[in-house]
Every structure is written in C-alpha cells, then in structure tokens.
Length: 174
Image (cartoon, rainbow, N blue to C red; front, side, top):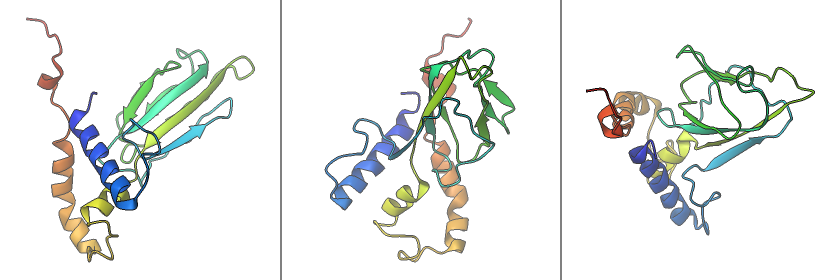
C-alpha cells in the first residue's frame, strides 16, 4: 500500500468497531474503508464538492469504470491543488476528499462512451467514536472548545501517518 500507517489506522478502527458493535465482519472484507458509493449512471460526473464528513486527514478511494476516452474526458479535478488528472478505466485514485474540493468532468461523447465510478471512504465520526471509548463526542464530554483545541495535535498525528519520499524507495538519478 502507498499509505501503510494510514491503512493500519483505518483497519484497526474498523476492527474495533466490528468487535464493539458485534458485527460478523466488515462490510467490505479486506478493505479498510467502512462505506461505499456506487455511481452507476452511464455518464457519471459530479459538481465541485468536499466530503466534509470523511476523515479530514484521511483518504477516499475513487475507481473509474466504463469505456471512455480518458485523454479527452472524465478527468478528476482537484481545485486547491490546481490539478487535472487523467483517470483511465480501472484506475484507482486516493485523495483527501474531506479537505480538497474536487469533481470529475463529463465524458465528451455520451452516445458512444460511458463512465461509472465507485468510491470507498470512512466517516470521521467513526474514528471519534473509537477514540471516545465508543461514545459520541457529546456523551464523552468532548465539547466544541475541546475539539478545537485538539485540532492541531490531530492534524500532526494524521500527517505523521503518511510516508516520506525516502520511504518510497524511488529510484533517483545519482
């Protein structure tokens, strides 16, 4: 995985919720995300949005399916990053959908092409639920001021889960 420490946090949180809630297994065994959306209209596209309820420093996994000219349409656009990504059918893209405004473009020739997508994600409240001893923020006595004061620490903890370039073993020129 490209994000081994982040994936471990997702997996541990998922397993703790499974055990605490008495579930027989994860909704998607072997996948650390707890929810999915399947977009199955033939010309799946979206408007600009952020997925505010997702774990802010986490990732969602977007998969593109269908038969479309990925060079000319169906691109994934990331607003703050000023990026437009060509996404081929079958590609998986991991983005911080809770904090980066994003959308995907329509396909150019809808009479001859189709584009579908699926998205795996986990709500940030699942992580809070576990951190609060399987209780809501309100029931755990965690008010808005406490959440706000903990934000810098939580962001530092979140960023520490991401690998550095040196961890990727990327071949660099001598």
